[in-house]
Image (tube, rainbow, N blue to C red; front, side, top):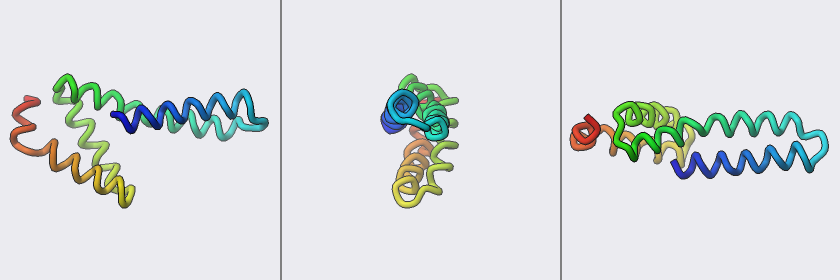
Length: 95
């Protein structure tokens, strides 16, 4: 959740920079907007995990599966996500 929020804040700051300060930054601002919107599932999933919602556990597991492809940091984060959220104790906690 924290990494998604930080990426979103950085992307939003970049959007303002490229739209209002830099000239000819429309394409880059659009890419940063796509990045900012792409971080929303991470923030929503993190808040749902804090509230112990089962749908959030499933959402974060899907995001962990996608993160595995981003070698090496994403692989480690995705593996840790699987390890924590697929344990029997965690499943019982969210049920």
